[in-house]
Length: 295
Image (tube, rainbow, N blue to C red; front, side, top):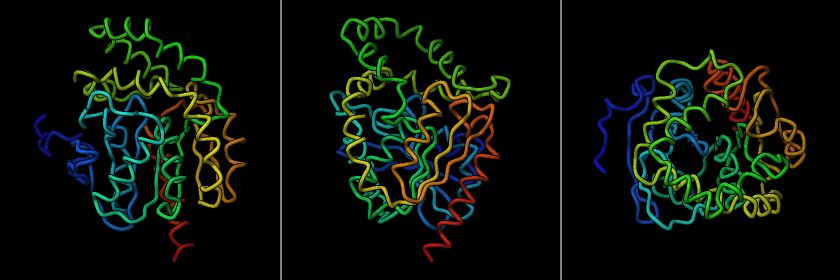
């Protein structure tokens, strides 16, 4: 796969973040990076990639060196066949990414599936994570996904999904629309931007492979919470989230000794898309508070 030119990176982010590549597990991993200051790593959700952070990058890069990754198998990173996509494997590769770009410690922000990966990463190396920012993170206390994951990843359903690939881009757009609390907030170019990587062969296989280990991963994640209990954490949720139950925020917050929660009323699963100004302001304030405490 050829490198895309920096001018081809999402217009709203291109002024503050350059497209870069590194090697993880012998495969090419794409990321956007820009700004200066303490490292802040952004991990996208299951249907997203670094494009998810185009509204956030200009705000975050004012006081942080930001790394917005395309995890292996997603976005424009390599899609090696047979790669393990369980939470732990994703987390181990994210730590390899930090090593590869020379980041010893960072603030770690993850959304949805990326939030679960962020928590697992912190559990594997808590000394490297200054703070966690979890945006509607997939978690063991939300029942959403527990039933659908084994169904969608079953052999006959997986076969059917892959056979229907020509029509899946339309289905992908419909899924994204359902993630909004108010669809009038869908900005021009949003659905097209999210759909772009799904024209790459193997894109939907990644989604199914993640689903295969979902319930087992949730059990492991619940057992892995203790090492991250003392990491300062910010939980952010949309009050109308249909993907990860906002009610699970209360149970999840109990696992942390220093946890702040905020609900964006009337917002769905993607607050960084629906209310980017409010989202960015909340994250920046949290990072500033945490930075003052560390110093």
